[in-house]
Length: 243
Image 1 (tube, rainbow, N blue to C red):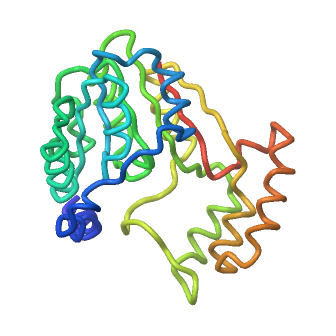
Image 2: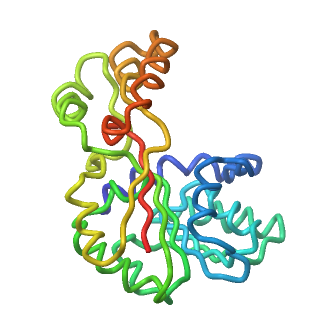
């Protein structure tokens, strides 16, 4: 955990030196946020936990929708940046605190939990799933935008090719795409549905293996594959909706 905290502090450290880059201002029409709102319903006056808030875009979005947002992140730099921005902008319905995702059960139960690209950083996941259940009020909901480890082919390349030769590896050293067995851990505590809003498969090969040289062709291939529902589960992007 300390190694991950140091990694993410390094990511957000430079932002504190530039008032214009303290946070990421959200796109009000972001399709991920729009789908999350559909899942949550009316968030006005409700408590919403932004798990792994990072640069703060999702926290600011849901706060603008009237939610009382509890923003948590392992990085003290990210939390300090968000606090500073909220103070400058007079935003009083965001409470930001440094907290590990595993400790989410220590906060007061919330109506909703939102997370973007956070679950695949968390281990042991079975322990987190139980803590998440404690963090949500009866009848509450959670929504996560995540990567997806269903494709054995994609995972083979990730484990044996990514990070070698000219091929970059992004993120902290311990992260791994969210696996189906981890979603099953969530099913022990919630009603779970997974959705695949787009096909991202060929595009990954273009980005990592060819440095984006065939992105245009890869997008066309992915759009063609998305026509076939049985194939969609192999997309690298998914929504995980909990009730």
